[in-house]
Amino acid sequence: MIQERGWTVRFQENILKLFILAFSLSVLFTWLAIIIAKKANIVDSPDRESKIHTKPVPLLGGVALFLAYATALLLNYQFSWELKGVAIASFIVMLSGLIDDVRGLSASARLVIQILCAIVVVAFGVRINIVPDRFFFAYPLEAIITVIWIVGITNAMNFIDGADGLAAGLTAIAAGAFAIIAYQTGQIYFAFLNAALAGACLGFLVFNFHPAKIFLGDAGSAFLGFSIASLAAMGEWSGNMPIVALSIPLLTLSILIFDMIYISMSRIARKKVTSFKEWIEYVGKDHLHHRLMNMGFSQVQTVLFIYLIAIVFALGALALKESVTYQALLLLSQGVCILVTVMVLMIVGRGNMEKNRITETRLK
Image (cartoon, rainbow, N blue to C red):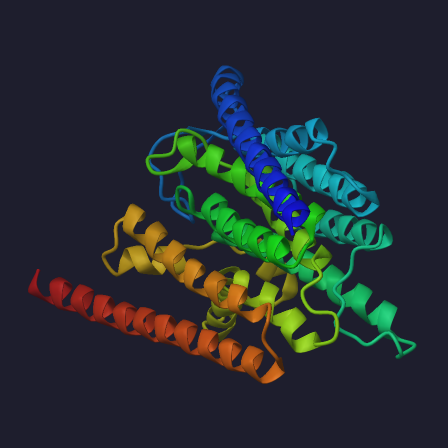
């Protein structure tokens, strides 16, 4: 009993040290990235399509985050065969995003790169385990699901990265939840990976929370989305209950999934997009954060409100680790009800705003 308590204390100390190291490195690298980006004129200029900032902002935040996370893991020798695959693939995804930030890269090219990188991750042994091994098609089916999951979450993170601190904060919440679950279930290595990512994200938020002094850029949002999706696939959530195993990452990342599904349905219904190519290339101010700000929320209020929803879902995911299938289905149903409520509020708010605009136009 004494030995077990001693091991627990050492583990807690090590994970705290890794968290602090990742946080500190992220603060340092982000500060340097701001200086370099300004001198090299690598900045994000405002436009009227999807951006809400009003002046150019440095864009190398994603590179700083990647370096902080990778350095923290390397200094602590926290790597495995699966992580090597994730590291190689996430670096390529981050690099493609950086090229897009600096020179421009088509959405189609980025999507192809993401798919190939997701296949690399699967080839290194990472996959979502939800199909019983007794079925001969288990591995190929899980491989396909994993590729779709990683690519989907990667793009969902890129979609929602439109308000100061939003993407990094959501990643920190998700990684923090994964780290806690890993700690409680004895997944030591997995806890280290998530604690380092959470620390790196929080360190970045020192400069990225409103008013942001630096942005993630496509390099950062793609890296965060790809990394958190891959980590979700790596986790051992429930060995003998596929619904529970699937529910934990679904709940934890539900804000990203909801935003992607909702805007996709809205754009298709309004005929804003009529093909897959148009869908991946479309840019507009119709995401969850845009709609909340249109309802009168400030940017800080919007981000904090979305953080709160994400924390609620993360707490639900924490409760799932010792649940059974029907309890997982109940929590998933509760999550759907919460998101539908948010959606209804946004639709009503949008309708009221349109009526107010019409009334103001007539009065003029």
